[in-house]
Length: 148
Image 1 (cartoon, rainbow, N blue to C red):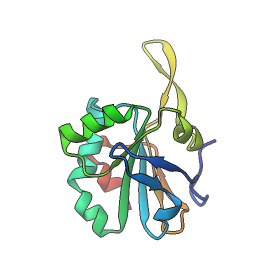
Image 2 (cartoon, helix red, strand yellow; image 1 turned 90 degrees about the vertical axis):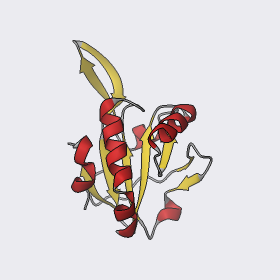
Image 3 (cartoon, rainbow, N blue to C red; image 1 turned 135 degrees about the horizontal axis):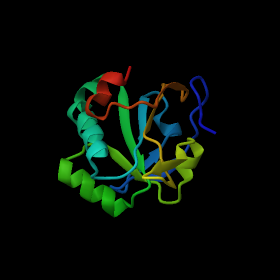
């Protein structure tokens, strides 16, 4: 079940693709943009990551930490980060623990076939660790403008 606005964000500790431990509980006191995306280096995911990266200084100035999550491997994340000079953490959720905890591992369909995949969703987590916004209709090219 997907967490909703007003609920505590599911806690996690996970190494990012740079070998840094990301501990959501330790980030309390900061606002967190936790965004889930389907796949590294695809058009929509690249547009979204680049939009956040281009606006990263403003987001940091506004007290945000940006964390991207997909089920891709650390190697895929490292390549993606290097190719686009992404300056925020990417988490490899290869065991699906986070996509399950945040309720974004869903059944999708394309060309009449159904499959499981990640719903592009952004959770804004306030300084107390409470979800303050959930963005489900992500504008990949202008995502930063959707974040308050």
